[in-house]
Image 1 (cartoon, one colour):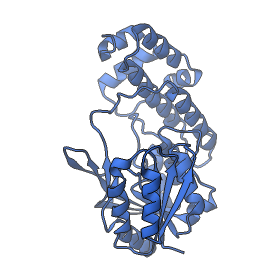
Image 2 (tube, helix red, strand yellow; image 1 turned 135 degrees about the horizontal axis):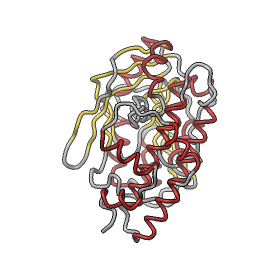
Image 3 (tube, helix red, strand yellow; image 1 turned 180 degrees about the vertical axis):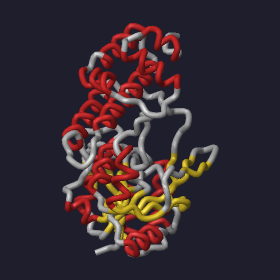
Length: 335
């Protein structure tokens, strides 16, 4: 049994796979299990995975039909034997001492998971990314006091501290104890659902503030440009799943976070359709369809805003009362 299992979901990343896998193979922590999950990749990635497995006996390869990121991560969890499990996205790469540092912290402090800081990397720059929270151990009381208030979504309609899984290391026993896997019906923003449940179920975690151990690759030119026609139905489904999990718990009131969550994703979808190359008529009808959703109407009716800008307040008001054309003009959606 390895100390750490590292799950790498792989799809169409031939350009980046070498840098990713070699950053894992060359970890200073040698007692690791590397699980490369080929999610039906159409390029040379399947062959590259098999070549790596022949070179390093710590590598397991899972070949499967394409099922998306959640499905690929779950396939990795299923075969993982390590005491702890980490996730690395295949277009990213990690610092060579990442898992040695995280594993040592996990063992020394006997916590359910460990979270590090990271770099945001593009072709042009490398930027440090840190969280607005204190370094060190969070026990259950501190989690309830400092993490629960924005576990799902903050009242400023922004993500809280726990979101991405790739800069975390989880105790496998935590996942098994709570039957925790990724929901394969949620194919966008799946980390939001998984991390909310982790944060609620965990008894403790350690935040390694100032340790930049993961390199998250992002393309600044592609942000908010991708319109997916099915996104709103996926986000609605995620919100309803979160309601099923958090609406009736007796140790915290998550209602306002659930309202903020649906409003956040409404803005997300509306801005994506607005920035798409669809016709004015299509954009108008799609925005109207989203605004007529009963869950969103309930969210607008009951949401109590925290510290948000006047600009966001006006945007919420316009969408709540369906000033669609005005909103489209202000946002530049009408070309």
